[in-house]
Length: 68
Length: 135
Image (tube, each protein chain N blue to C red):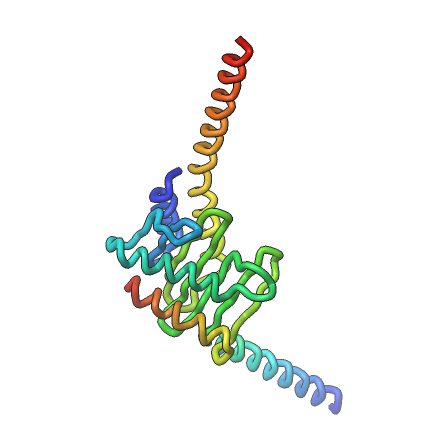
């Protein structure tokens, strides 16, 4: 009986963790950011609020408004 | 393949790309999907500015994606050219970058044979001059 309750608890915990990860991933996808890729294969992400993003995102907005 | 054809193929292949500009490394427009030349120049200038601004300690960037609420801006460059493209929100980043790199490669294939031809012409001239000198 105790074993079944433990299994049910672990399944519920796993489902919750999975749902949380999916939610975080989906919400992060819509966030403003800049991904920069370098010749050596490295990549850096500048999240909204960083100094780099503050310089780069206005230029990106300008490009979008120019093309539309 | 010329720059205009490479860009036309890009827009045809990638449904996510709304507009694109192919330019020299200095921002000189080579081809554009925008009808207005001034807007194409502005996009090319901004693409160069994005790359320059993104350059940091890790060196010169070769590609970038700037995602804002209105959509995404992509810039990919090689030694001689860059291509800038605009998409809607949440594009398939890997696919767009792949298509842009393909566009750059195709645009480069036009330039390389021209360079080879120029090199061959130079060699011919050198050989002819050497022959004249020997005679």
